[in-house]
Length: 203
Ligand code: ADP
Ligand code: 5GP
Image 1 (cartoon, rainbow, N blue to C red):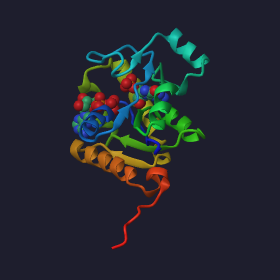
Image 2: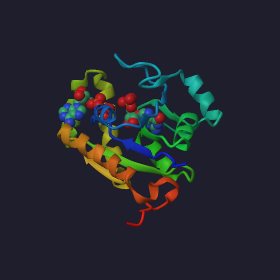
Image 3: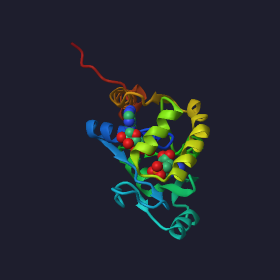
Image 4: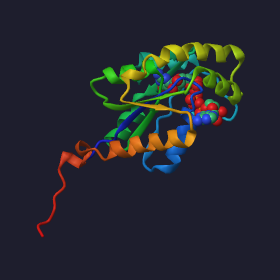
């Protein structure tokens, strides 16, 4: 059976990754968003089980000790992780999976011998615009916004290690680019079922 494709997507917080992913997932079929576990508190409007599995730190630590994450990292003072169970099962069943994870998590996946992914980095056009977006989202305190902006500078340095880079300036254009990458990756020859070439009947 054909294996699913793992899309690993990273972006500094506030770049517009969630907005872009919602658009593209509303347009392309067969993309499964991997819901991460986090110790962060839910933001207004976020739903447990849909946006994240919101769990206490002690529960997160038990999951680490039980080896239940394919990757996990401390990001902006909270813990975030991708549970192995869902991702590995969906890929084996031929379903495409999207991981929305930070640069540390993406590096762990890249180094893993078990999971091969298509790595996509989404960047803001400028730091000043990132600040505007974080403020405009109205979900984080000034202190949290400053921490996220500071971390954005180091995260941007990892962009060249990704397979693709999308600058999210115009939302429509960035969404088009993300959808195009996913469509093109699905069409790659080596992804054909069992790697078999197309067979044409003789005329
Ligand atoms: P992330 O998931 O990367 O943290 P969000 O998707 O929550 O970011 O976007 C942060 C804010 O920026 C939201 O208010 C969103 O509406 C806005 N936004 C996202 N993309 C764009 C864009 N291309 N132009 C203007 N505003 C945008
Ligand atoms: P936020 O708190 O804004 O939802 O996410 C903060 C950062 O954590 C984002 O960069 C997001 O991609 C990252 N993140 C979300 N889930 C995971 C995960 O499971 N693992 C890792 N390593 N990072 C994650």
